[in-house]
Amino acid sequence: MSAASQPTRTATAAADRAAGGPEPERHAGATVDFTLLAVAIAGVSLSAPLIAATAAPALAIAFWRNAMAVGALSPFALVRHRGELRRMGRRALLLSIAAGAVLALHFGLWLPSLSMTSVASSTALCTTTPIWTTLFLRMRGHRPPTLVWAGTLLAVVGVVILTGVDLSLSPRALAGDALALGGGIAAAAYVLLGAEVRRTVSTTAYTYVCYSTTAVVLLAACLVSGSALHGYDGTTWAKLVALTVAAQLLGHSLLNRVVRGLGPSTTSTAILLETPGAALIAALWLGQTPPVAAYPALGVILVGLALVVRAGRQSA
Image (tube, rainbow, N blue to C red):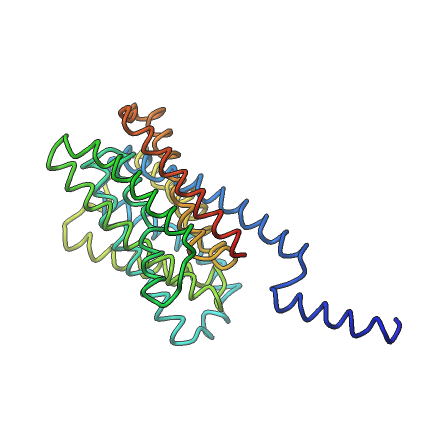
């Protein structure tokens, strides 16, 4: 290597490190993250239809999907990540526990809403997560681009259109919409807390502490409310296992995996894709074909999502 080329290569390497790695590596990492994100969205899209078709109390369903996930993660977390779990700092541990608590709140609000309103409306309102994520980031001093606000507001319009479909049905449906909206706010806090912890903690260690906390909180809620935790038939247990694998291990866990690379705004915004996915599955499986007014609402939500994603790419 010549003396003249050495400084150039050194400067290039320094620039790569400052930018987060060489361009091919960053591109490859983003490709993997978006692929995993697509799998995660497919997994969580099965969540609402599976829950609606499972003959068990809502809180019990939430408890078992987290408890089963903890059981599946235990061999990996307690053997391969035991040292990391022991070395977790106080701040990371407390934030992981807080994330688990708000995830339990998310489930406690959203799951009951599925039996009170339609799957499409419940899912759409619960996936307003990016709206609240953007607002929380702004409250923390971040200044999202104008295009992010435009996309977020457009998504709100789509949610209002879809919610309006249920407003004329019954007070029960309206109450279900309110619960789903609260679930979306809790999910935003969960995504932001997870993004902070994932800066220094692996996916397995974080999700193990988080899901364990969620399971404990939901177990207490089940005991207080008297929700039956057993006595189900084989079909119900099979659906609970399917829900755990699809929505929890492939859904939430992969979202926790990609949030470090894609960031909380892009990750939470992509969750909006759960809305058309869940509505389509519900229409084919449960016969809950959305009213005509729901279709343009879903289209508006997706346009808002596209604007937010585009703003993220321009910022990058």
